[in-house]
Length: 554
Image 1 (cartoon, rainbow, N blue to C red):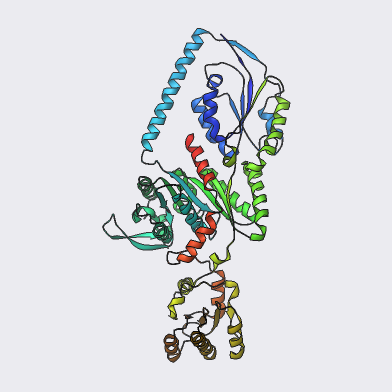
Image 2 (cartoon, rainbow, N blue to C red):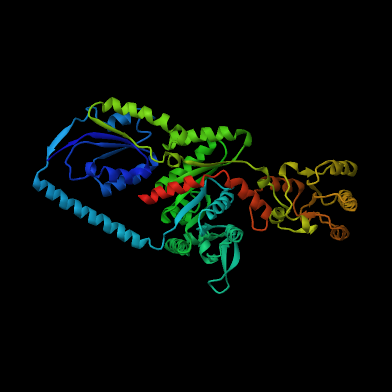
């Protein structure tokens, strides 16, 4: 008829809450009118979800502390949250009327809880798939390349993997099988993913529900497009993909806030899809973390959970340094310690709390499945120079032109750092052409007929002796001012040498190539395969899936 209750300190992680409730159901039961507190030391990102879980299932007698609240930033918050006077043993007689009243109250709460779960299951019956939302801190960070690696890794772990790009910008026209061959607009990355991974179980009409072409923003503000219709299109497309997929990968657009002006930014869409987000940032320390923090704030505002962080394009010589210090930055600033720092991080907190709760303390240390769930960084990827080298096909898209001849060279890649601007005499150019690596990109003015003839002659000489010739000549000259003569153009086409004619000055062409970031496409199979093989081995898929599973358990 009496119950002895002690205050309890628990160091645990998100995935063990269900076990705690089962093993300590009697102690945590609302029927026990004790005044003791149960302190939970948890990662910052898990506190809100765990709070909701306990409020719904157990009682209000739990105190949740984050890593930053105890012994990291200082002891101020810990002193405020932990009473100065230690809890003593309490003995309470349980009266029959109180027992009956509390028992009826508990039954009512349980019925309400299970009814809520039943209703939620009915609402989400069509959404059985988990979703990973890939976003970045800015443009040209590597979302598409990372998405390729994610799809490849997920296909090795699941039978059917879905893909969706909720909001797209640059689009192409394809035909939808479900619409009887009708043309639909989809983001260009959608065609790459569907063709590369043979996602035939998903129709094109669902993979890119919202397209934002030039002028769309003005039309939206003028009232021609409706916010509710946009979000409904995204939700319906996502539900259709979930119905045929075991897991869904969503690729964002630009940084997390892109699309805010039309009320469809990445954070809001991820929250609507109940997706966990993977944030990608370029290699570095200070600037990379600053960008991560800016984007993370918007995710917090919309209640989006971060499943992990990928640091991309890390300088190979600084790989270990970046990985080590970025891990520390994520741990101390976001309150999510990585595995190798966990024990050294927690035991100072234990000593601090023991100084306040030195009497009547029942202490438990739970470290079930520590590895993975406390880690935030799921990938640190060294830079691969080849992936940033444009092919001739990329230059054709950049300058909106085509090769005059040598179409067999269209998928050859050239290093931007090895571009040669020809301003010397013909003799010097020929020496350079023969001494430089075979695959070099040369630029010269369209009026340099001597250089053009020398290039064609060297191309023919190499063919005759059986040597490879992979260089390409780019002829520059402002349109309307400098033109290629008809005779020279016919000679180039007849000889078959790779020559590209652009309507820009040499300075403009050099600057455009230098600032250009080549994008992956389905035609460039060699670079796509190289990107998948390079990225996939540096991503911890098991850790991402574990964090998603932990959220679903709640």
